[in-house]
Amino acid sequence: MSLSDNPDDFSLYIHFPWCVRKCPYCDFNSHELSGEIDEHRYIKTLIRDFDHSISEFNQRSIKSIFLGGGTPSLFSGKSLGHLIKYVTESVSCRGDLEVTIEANPGTLEHDQFARYLDAGINRLSLGVQSFDDGCLARIGRIHDADAAREALENARKSGFRNINIDMMFGLPDQSLEMAIADCENAIACDPEHISCYQLTLEPNTLFYVNPPTLADHDQLHDMQTGLQALFEDYGFMQYEVSAYAKRGMQCKHNMHYWTFGDYLGIGAGAHSKILANHGVLRIWNEKHPRNYQNKVANGVSWRNREPVLGNNLVVECMMNALRIKEGISLDLFERRTLLNREKLLAHTQVLHDEGLLLIENDQIQCTEKGYLFIDEIIERMIS
Ligand code: SF4
Image (cartoon, rainbow, N blue to C red; front, side, top):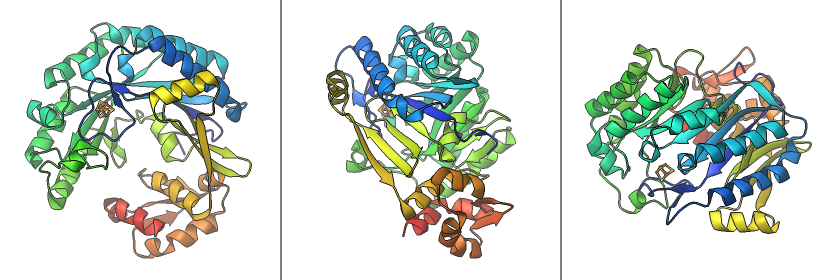
């Protein structure tokens, strides 16, 4: 619980649903731009959404803000600054508030980083994905490796001291050697944090309909373990399945998600999770940007909600918590779910007996062996 030291704090997620072009593997709520974004209208909508939704987080402090997408870096520093100022002046915020923006190297002007810093953003997550121009072209990205390096250099020169590089592996026609070389290039840029995701084929994407040639299961396993060893050699400690950080630079926002903390999501399609008096509520906003903006403007309900109950609650909490190397304390499990630990232990006893989970000193986590089979563990908990 070291990174989420006050269970009552919450995180704020703000969704920006537009991209220059839709990537063929992407199943996020992102829509290809067909003209100029009406920044003023969307920011106004977000503020209305925030004003309406914040009442459910009464008297609680914000620990992190995450501007995600889509491509939030399509928005100007001025617009984002206005929004962040409004939010941080409306509710109490922790002194060490982390404010992250996801940025796409293909959308950045030279002086944009300084404006983002002025807006109160103190962490940059750059969607590089690969430093190999062939791989980038095959996954339909709009930038090349030079643009990524230039963006990272500019961000550093502008004063960003907390930079994440998003990378992917298992890309079309990518060998183990190429994946390792790719991440060596990321390390050479000297970020504080690297997220490294395996490319997966998700329904409702172009790649799902028309799959490219991808590495097989054994090759992917070799890539995963090879990259883990590489990152560790360079001082990036793995603290979650896909997340590696230098000492003390773990992402607070994501750690809060993974320890099943509460969060408010505003924006088209954004999700919230709240522990209310009678249990956990899952809330999700109207997904399409046009409908979302119209509904908020007209005061027509844009938030859908349902309770998360019983076994679903155990599984949902543990799907997140087991992704973290250190797992979760039984005490925090009880606080986050309002369930007692016996309910969790009943679910996990067999996995513990098989050496996949470790339950010790009030903490539950995957064993080394279990961490290699995390998807299977989750599937068995669901069934
Ligand atoms: S830039 Fe990111 S959010 Fe946008 S389409 Fe590509 S993967 Fe999806």
